[in-house]
Image: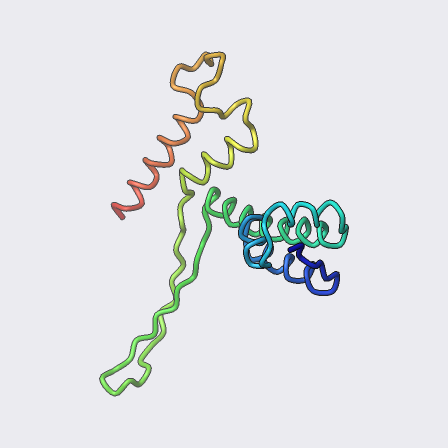
Length: 150
């Protein structure tokens, strides 16, 4: 039995599933169709294809932004409320903490954004036998250790 495409419902649902981070296989399952039907609909219904593309870009942007934030490090503000035995607020402490860059996020970002310079096994050895990536990882690990001692 061939699945009936509904131009009012299917683009909306597919877009919502894509924005939620689902991949084509899972989107097809949620729509109650097989993957071949999903691909056929993408080819034959522009609004369906556009809904998937646009919403995948939206979620990818959010993930990319979160990865970049982890790669660069960031600052957070924590609020601690101190209460007495009667649950009455005595004071509020506000502290700012620096979240150090994450080595894994740095590595992933650089390997994907600058493949020529940041691949695991470059065809040409750099003059620096340690390699730039190794030095970055070592530097971030040292910073992390120093922060943990404080």
